Amino acid sequence: MLLTHLDAATMRGGYGLIKDAAILLEDERIAWVGPRVEAPGGGRTVACGGRLVSPGLIDCHTHLVYGGSRAHEFEQRLTGVSYAEIAKAGGGIASTVRATRSQSEAELRAAALKRLDCLLAEGATTVEIKSGYGLDRETEVKMLSVARGLSRVRPVDVVTSYLGAHALPPEFRDDRAAYVDLVCNEVIPLVAREKLADAVDAFCEGIAFSVEETRRVFEAARACGLPVKLHAEQLSNLGGAKLAASFGALSVDHIEYLDQSGVDAIAGSGTAAVLLPGAFYYLRETQLPPVTALRKAGVPVAIATDLNPGSSPVHSLLATMNMACVLFALTPEEALLGLTANAARALGLKDRGVIAPGMKADLALWDIERPGELAYPLGLNPLKAVIRNGKLVRGDLS
Ligand code: DI6
Ligand code: FE
Image 1: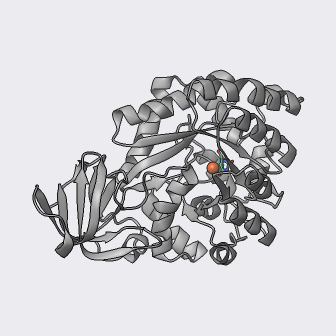
Image 2 (image 1 turned 180 degrees about the vertical axis):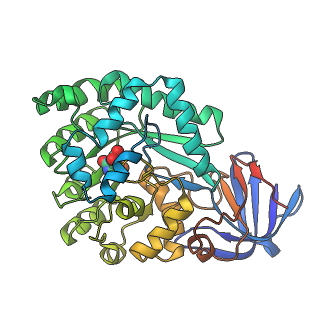
Image 3 (image 1 turned 90 degrees about the horizontal axis):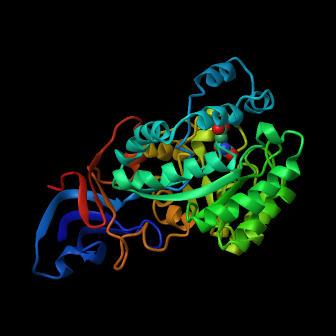
């Protein structure tokens, strides 16, 4: 199929716009892209009405499988109670752990599908999903199995991360080391063996796990051949990003408190930075991530929803683009790169995120002329069609 009469935001080496482009799809791959006047002839041609096409969007950081709701905590926070105070009082992540442990796979799946459908309605074709609301072996496996299963019932690729080191479960309150032992010696080998996780993540923070505990988790992941990523420097600067860089992490995420030496460390290791403006917004943070320093150092910057029930109940990639621009001063082109090429980097996926020959034919067609039209309105969805693996899975192309 040859797609014509469109402008292609290829995301190759930057925004990479080709005006009046053509894209040849062969089976599940992109076979050719370039100016329409140079397009190979023959075969079926579909004129796309002069719209903008981008790679299918990639949400590279979500926690969208979980039980329960935290609306009551949202209300508490509105009265001035902080996220950290709620966590210390046994709420926060721990309250979602209780709800997630009590739910069946079917219940978790039904709730997760509603959330996933919001992302798909805005052009997502790949979504990362973390565990971390079970903490015990059985519930972590349940969460990862549910996450994996979503791609069997929706047109999306799901990438999973095991986030056992998300919070200390109540049953280990008096023995942190024993919990880290469980994560490292039992659950990481199990999820690696069963191919339930594509990566290992951790939350390195005062209210979560120390740098030394995180190091143990990363060593266990390395021993099992799993790549790592890290929730780092979200609420304070512990130096987690430097540790992650020393393990060649795929990404460091949040990083509001990352300093110049941290930026230099990740620039040197090829680690992507993932900005999560939804969490910044919901927690009313004021410490901005070091966007200028990241740009200067040439670090690939991704953005993601961080979809989770506590700090970022954000179900919209377009709203995430808007927040990345308004709150973090990314350009709309940078925000789009953050949901395509750089999001693929953050997941270690080399076969997507750009429109180029040999890449997966995952495309989003938008009824717009420029990426600013994706980032500037809130609540308006200009998605026209989605192609995944070379097949139309949403909308129509004409
Ligand atoms: N950072 C986050 O943004 C989420 N987890 C984490 O480590 C928040 C999780 C929650 O509040 O439920
Ligand atoms: Fe997160």
